[in-house]
Image (tube, rainbow, N blue to C red; front, side, top):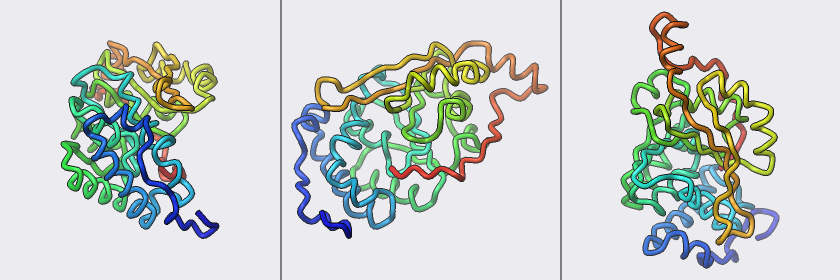
Length: 248
C-alpha cells in the first residue's frame, strides 16, 4: 500500500483466525471484508490504511465478542458505523437477533446494502441511541454493544435505557478499560448500570485479544425514574453525539 492508499497489493485472504471464528459462514465474512475494502473506503467509512488490518483489527476482533453473549440473545449495536461490531457478530452468531443503530444516512445506507447483499437477518434503525424515537422502536435488549463510541460515562447513559433489567452492556474498549471503570463507576451506577468488569475475548485466535467493559442493568431503575420524572421512565441523555470523530 503506497502513501495514496493504494491497496491493490493487499492480500485479502482470510487468516486462520477468521476460519476458526466464522466456520461455515466464512464466505459471508469474506464478502463483508471486500465491501469494507471497496465501498467502505469510497464512502469514507474505513480509512485506506486500515485495509491490511481489516481481518484481525476489525472483523475478527468484533466477531469474538460472541464469546461474551449467551445463545439466542437480542443484541443492539449503537453507533454501528460500517457495521462494527454488529455485522461480524451476526455472521459468526446467526442465533442472535441483531439491530444496528446508526444516525448518519450514508452509513445507514451502507449497512442496509451490506445486509441485503449478505442475506443476513439484521435490522437497521437510523437515529441516535439517546433519541426517544429510537428507544420507542426497540424492545429492551439482552445486550447493547458498541465500539469506539464514547467514554463509559456517556456510553452508559445512552445504552442503559435500551437494555432489559438483568441484561448487559458489552462494549469493546482498549487497554484503558479498567481505568474507565474506576473513573466512571459512580456515573454509570446513577443510570442503572453496575457490576462493571473487564472481560477479554479471542485469546485463542487473536494476537491482540478484544477487551470489553461489561455491566449489568439493575432492577428498580425504571421505577425510580418514574417517581423522579413524574411518570417518564428511563434516562434523558443531554450529551450531543454530533462530535463523534471515530471512524470504523
